[in-house]
Each structure stands twice: as C-alpha cells, then as structure tokens.
Length: 235
Image (tube, rainbow, N blue to C red):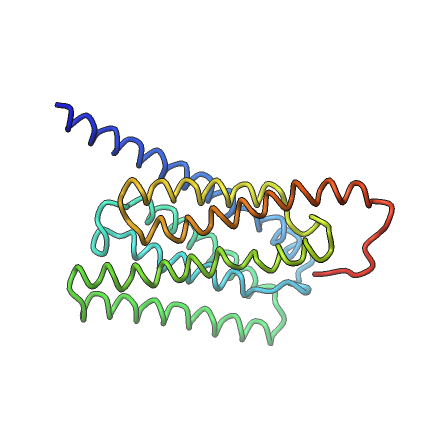
C-alpha cells in the first residue's frame, strides 16, 4: 500500500511538472505572433531572419520523436509539447515563405525540405537499423544536443545585455517563461529518471536564471543611466 501510494505520488508529480512545462512552452511558441502580424501588415519579412524558426522546427521534430512511445515510453508530455511547437514553427515558416522576397523564398523552402529530409533519415535509422534500447539512446542524444544548442542561443543576448548595459533586447516575460519551462521539464525528467530530459533542461534552467539575474541588475542600471541614450543600435 505504501509503495503503491509512493508510485502514485510520483506519477501525479511528474504529470503536473510535464503539464506545467507544456503551458509555459506554449507562451514561448506564441511569442513570435506580434512579429508575424507585422510581417502580414507590411506584406514583407523586412530584415527578419527565418532561421530561428527552421532551427525551432528541427528541434521540435527531434524531441517529438524522442517522446513517442515507440522510442521512449512513459514521457508522452515531451511529445505533446513538441508536436504543438512543430505546428507553430511550421506555420511561421510558411508565412515567412509567403511574404519573403524571391531569394529568401527559395532559401527557406530549401531549408524546410532539408529539415524534413533530416527528420526522415533520423526516423528511418532509428526504426530500421536500431533495436529499442539503442533507438532510445540514439534519439536521446540527438534531442539533448538539439535542446542544449537551443538553450545556448540566448548566450548572444546575454553578451549583448552586458555590452550595452541595457535589457532592451531581452524581454522579461520571455526569459521568465523559458526559465519556468526549463524548471518544469527538469523536474519532469528527474521524476522520470530520464537524463536526456533533465540534463538539457537543467542547463536551460541555469541559463534562464542567469538571464533573469542580468535583467534584474541591468534594468536598475538602465534606469539610472536613462539620461544617456545608446550610441549603437544592435538588431
């Protein structure tokens, strides 16, 4: 009875952490909507880059595949969050292609095809050439590497904040959502005893905490130095 109750508590706790992670991730997925509303209004992608959405789609597809029961049973909430993310990224890429100039259309279309090609190869290799245990390890390492590279991308923003002593380019709620999502999936991975989930999200938690600490410090500094405008604009 005690053992059964403990297992039930672990299950409820892990599900709660996973659901929370899905909710916080949803905030991140919808964050580009204002950018695409601007693109639709202006009928142009202007100077925006479509590469973050390409990388985002690849990351979501790999992590979605890792969360599928055929690869790693018991972590379906990893699959749900990344399936939603993949849909959002695909919509963003489609809109980008529609409103981009011809050269960008060709480039983005080629990259989109390449992403689906890479994903198809990963699925083929994991299903046809690997047994169940090796499949989980193979896709797990790929998903971890993809997540870590995604979490490392804010390092540029962190460097920019330190150099400019301004938090203008680091939105608070985006940083907060990233931290909360990382914490949730770190807990989910720990409760599921899955290092391919908790290691990258542990790194994401650390980087998210660094971002908020910098925001707290430099937002105060920015207010004190508000009399002096930035001389250099970073985009």
